[in-house]
Image (cartoon, rainbow, N blue to C red):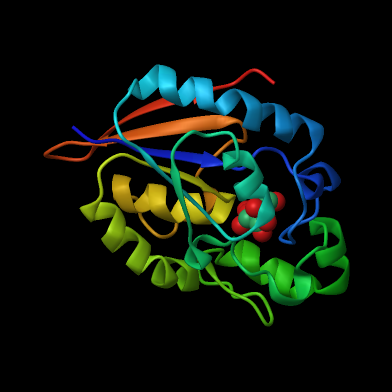
Length: 192
Ligand code: F6P
């Protein structure tokens, strides 16, 4: 059976600073993850064919850089667009837009950032990616937190209200193997 692997990019400079969105490079720890990822993947699938999908953002491309497989970048895999809040910390957002901050807490799936996107918007933009994923063999997606929550919820059939809270930790590969009913799942965390 074919497998779908998900991983967030390695820790980025913005992750370290607690800022959302942006297009920052990997931190030193993030680079260590990029360095160790090839061995984890090849130990897992041996010489089976695999294609790596990234977003257009440099933190995913850097994370994929040492993987010895064909790669494809998708604009549709870019992180949820936080609009006017892009590049801010959650604390700064709460200060600048207290009502928005409360509304997001109230209905995180439907909350749309000013000038940006909601999780619902992201689910819609991921439709073509999911269509293509369904047709492919082994795929590794190096993605972003919000994006991987949406893809994970699709394959596990999780409800919209739970989707924005799914835990997708850094430096962890999630392996999904679709079965007749549902998906088997394994997780591998690299100690970095
Ligand atoms: O902080 C990393 C990040 O990927 C941000 O770029 C993004 O806005 C956020 O996580 C999504 O998580 P949440 O919807 O819980 O704020």
